[in-house]
Every structure is written in C-alpha cells, then in structure tokens.
Image (cartoon, rainbow, N blue to C red; front, side, top):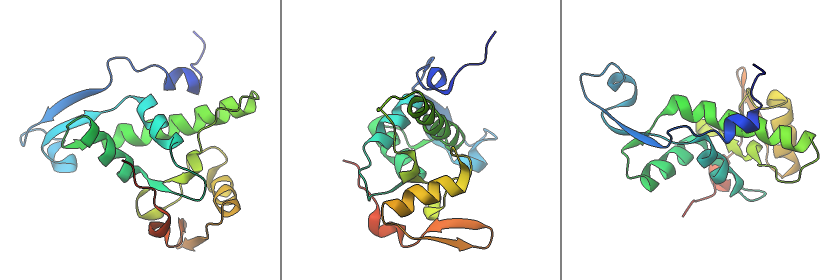
Length: 158
C-alpha cells in the first residue's frame, strides 16, 4: 500500500475532533493535567494557520487554547497538536511544489516562546528565511532559534 501524502493525512480526520476526559488517576494527567482534553482534527490546525496574515505570528500554544475554547474543552492534546501542525506545514509544501496557490503560511506558526520549528519543510533555515522576508528578526539562543520580540507580532484569534 503506497504511503499517504501529507495532504491525504491532513484531510483524513477519522473520528476527530473528539474530547476525552483525563482523570487524576490517568497516567497522562501528570503531563497534561486533568479535565476534558480535545484532540482536534488536522484540518482545524491548518484552518487556523491560514488565518495568520503577513507580518503576524502565532504560537502552537495559542492555537491550542483557541481550539480548546471553540470546542468547550479544558485543554488540547499537545502531542497531536505538534504532529498535526507539522502535517499542515508539509501538506502546504506539497501543494506549493505541485504548483497550487492554496498554501498555508506555516512559517508564521512558532513553537512556544517564539521558537522556530526544526521539523518544518526546509528546517530552521527555510523558516528563518521566510520570517526574515516578512520583517522579523531571528536570534540564536544556545542551539535554538527564536523570533526576537515575537509577542509584539502575535495575531489574536477571535
């Protein structure tokens, strides 16, 4: 069976979104907390990422908070959020490579604290170049890269 493309993964929501209750006795509670945890569909992350205009930024944490609120959940699964954000980025790259214009500006979605995402297409170098083309300054702290004063460019979802 051929490997699924990133666009196939992006558009395959299965039974998502779904909300699972995480009780204090659940081993995930230590890591994520207790309460209603949303596992959003990959397409939902892509839809939010597409809303971020040029010159603006968002963090994966802000997207997770927005989706949790939208679905009346206490929080969103961090693990699936990271996976689905990367699927959205790679699906966008696939569409762009095939000549399509409906790309997702994934480079505007940062990890927490304004950190660049090494798992995006082209790695840190490509995300850095795209961010700098939009006027952001990228700085190195240790071995990691961050957008300087990223908070000033944060896009606030409604």
